[in-house]
Image (cartoon, rainbow over all chains, first blue to last red; front, top):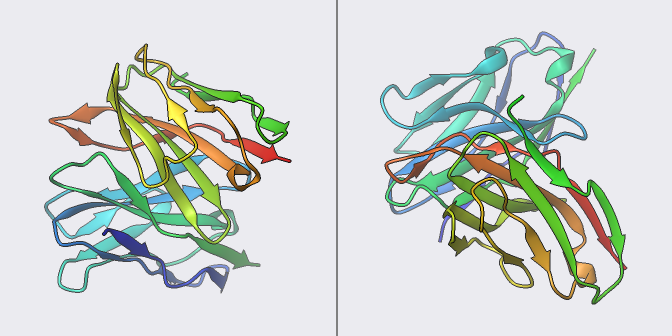
Length: 114
Length: 115
């Protein structure tokens, strides 16, 4: 069975500090990996995705993530956060051989403190 | 403007009263999907559709029905809602390439309360 674990449910961080949001997955097959962001009272939008190629992926708003196959992880990072980054962040995976069913983590609530 | 629309945005109903939540996209996407979001559980996929007349179960399909008669529309039907279906529901759509589903575009959500 597929599972996606986001280890931190809440992450408070001061403005301009770096942040890392952790995501681990369990799968016996190769996967595609996604990070989505949900701002208050809105739907989700894509931050970045890993499909193939370079394991370091850059996304919107200065975020990046690194795919680590041996550790089955896809942690999200930003070197300097802004107040506007306050949101809920979701990691998601789909299987390469099907690519149509998606599994989301439970989410990490990032709060940026002025 | 490219978008996914859902209606209604808010709905309060009673147990057993059939309801339909509509979803429409204007991006000519082949793939559409329904999710429910619950505190502490994240998003869970209910049903998805690869194209017209093609639907598949996600992780939590019990108590829900879907249909895909037109490419742009993917309604979610609760024939006999129960309180445990109180949740925030999202519709999403995506283009597909070689059977692979790429970036999903999400609607604004429908908050459903079943009394």
